[in-house]
Image (cartoon, rainbow, N blue to C red):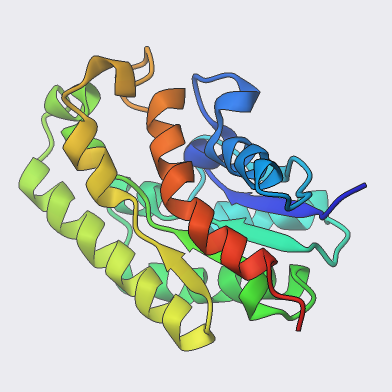
Length: 205
């Protein structure tokens, strides 16, 4: 049956506007299989628009049955988009990370956190009328908070935010909605996460 995988998040995990096999968690699982790590495609708990508290409620509703061999977490962009406070995000993200660790059977070394991208660099962002300098600043603040909390818990953190900023001018990197990443963009995220995930899942201790 292979190793089990639980992917937690929002539109970036569910892969809004791309095919299922184009989602970054599915691309990551496929890439790991080519390296001899038999990771199954993920059970995904994610919905476009979810904030941290909505993801928490979504997990309650689905009630996934662990433990899982691998768990990923990517959440926060909608907290920033809705102008929710950073300190609220920190508290709720930490609680979600604890849940993720629990789903991994308590193994912090089988959990992976990804940063979220800068939506302000997309065509949607350009036409949104929002203060894009503020979006950039808050994106960095929220992601930095997630990285600190992940580090404190001993959980691996992969920063993909720069990929979103460096490639947003390429229309092939953006989905047809002008906001979400395309499968090509997700492939870059997966490639960056791959060595970290391979290291984590290669552990047998």
